[in-house]
Length: 208
Ligand code: B4P
Image (cartoon, rainbow, N blue to C red; front, top):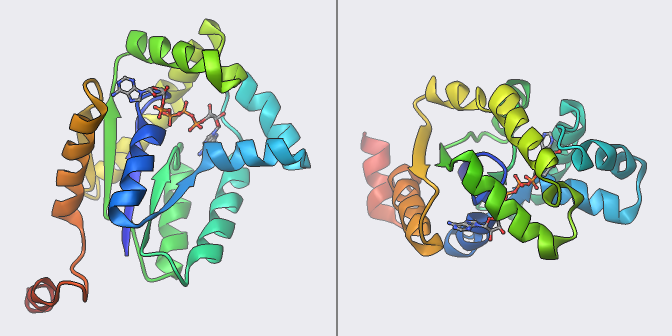
């Protein structure tokens, strides 16, 4: 299994790059933002609670997003060749729980890739997306800046969690989308486990 965490502040390009990566590596895309927005669209109780927090640029409680990820892992475990985690984990307790959940499937995170983008560029991108996305959290500068602050105070420390496991890699998230995609692929290719699709690599792995 190939499991990648795509990391970075709001608007860094996680969702954009995830769409390209799932096609390249045949991974299941798990975006907690998308899962939460699906709950909102369905008008569930969870969605109603999440909407109030998301519209204000605040994080949804850990147990809510962990429960959604647990369900999604269970639902895809037979067929998935791996997962790309987009927007998750956003806190250290979420990262710890993800490791436990993957261990139950005899799996783990191969690498975290962080896209680094400065605050003014993030604000520009998200306001631009807000013109067409209909997302309230993309249409108000003060809410966008609050999301960046929440990232810096609550989420950025997740990088240290993966750095301690030698799994953290940072990339410049500014530049053409395809250039950044190529750099992400190069990193993933270095960390991809050997598979039976490539017996030579698998043999090397066993001997190593
Ligand atoms: P998310 O849905 O994860 O939203 P995001 O971080 O804003 O999106 P992303 O970073 O993927 O956007 P992208 O760069 O692709 O979260 C929304 C909310 O949900 C959170 O605030 C929180 O309330 C809640 N939530 C989600 N997960 C949670 C969790 N685990 N725990 C608690 N709460 C959680 O795109 C941005 C724009 O940039 C696009 O328009 C794109 O076209 C553009 N762009 C991308 N790359 C570019 C490039 N290289 N150059 C120029 N523009 C680019």
